Length: 115
Image (cartoon, rainbow, N blue to C red; front, side, top):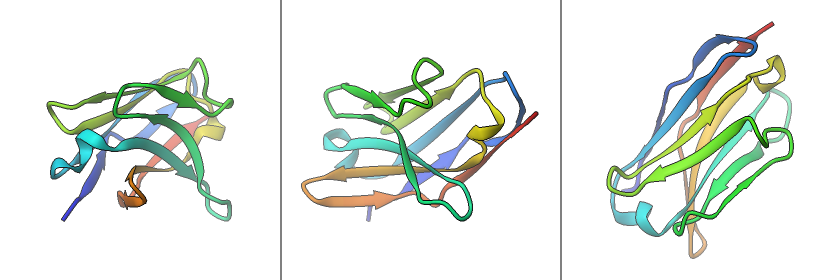
């Protein structure tokens, strides 16, 4: 059973930083594309950043230059470093793993950016 567990969320002032972590159980991690999504209540879940098993990254325009996704395959963990945070970054952030049509979601973690 693959499980994704997010950590590192919380409350931060605008301009501050947070680092989210997502620990993945099992061997699925090493071959999976890992992604961070976020969702504001009432809105659709949106893709924030992605990293392939080979390390290729992709970002939504709204976070380019501010967020950095990375992965540590030895620790089965993906990270999202969030700098220069803005109030509009406030959302529940979800870790997502996918490969060969199989996907898994974390339960989500709240990030709140105060103005």
